[in-house]
Image (cartoon, rainbow, N blue to C red):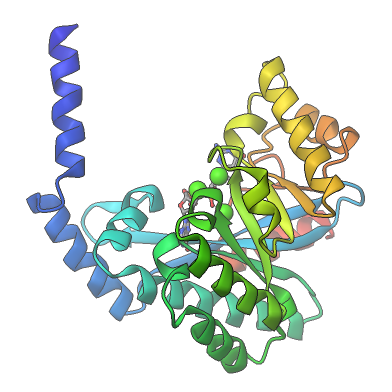
Length: 277
Ligand code: C2E
Ligand code: CA
Ligand code: CA
Ligand code: CA
């Protein structure tokens, strides 16, 4: 036991040390991948629980390291945030997602596109200008874009965040609170932000059929969102039973492996045809 514990601490310390050789090498490789436009973007459908139709897609960045293979965004996004690479990464994903969105619109698939924005990118004073420029570049109206921002990021630097969110919202961009329920935020503070959508965190949704507490959290979040006039999205829908229950509880949109994993654009088009969506 003691030995296992010690090992755990060592792994943790290694992961956290910003100057460990692995991290320094990864940082350089990531910078190279961003500059060479070698990151991929996969897309996961957001499905309307009432009609079964696709409402939109979430863009999720993918990095296939030439030697280490695929690396999880949960590993390299924090790295990018600590090293100033996050804004160029956000720009690359936004650009790719908007261009893909335009390509689908041109073929009459009028999907909306959700893109994740980390705290550091959001708090950059130039971020709203960047979004405006990329919308212009892709010739897409702001209404097709939803920015997903974690509950914690929304509340980091409240005055500045509020100002930036208001600018984005004023442009017509939609704003979603990502991982809702994990941040212990006060509703009084969230209420003052121009939010359009709540995404219930996967940790509550995946257990809701077996855990009554999780079910209660999901149910009250749906009620809360609906009462505030927000679109409510559940992440991590992995089976039919969960999907049906969410629909019964009044959740608007579902996302998860039950519908589809995140897929490359070409594979997703095959899936569109397959499901007739
Ligand atoms: P997230 O924003 O909460 O995204 C949802 C994550 O859940 C994705 O993991 C997705 O593949 C996964 N997922 C979707 N449906 C299911 C399901 O039914 N079951 C399970 N077990 N998982 C499901 P992914 O792609 O590995 O991304 C992890 C996190 O990395 C994201 O969490 C997001 O916080 C971050 N991330 C991903 N792409 C980007 C990006 O372009 N920019 C930023 N800033 N962050 C990103
Ligand atoms: Ca997200
Ligand atoms: Ca989540
Ligand atoms: Ca997340």
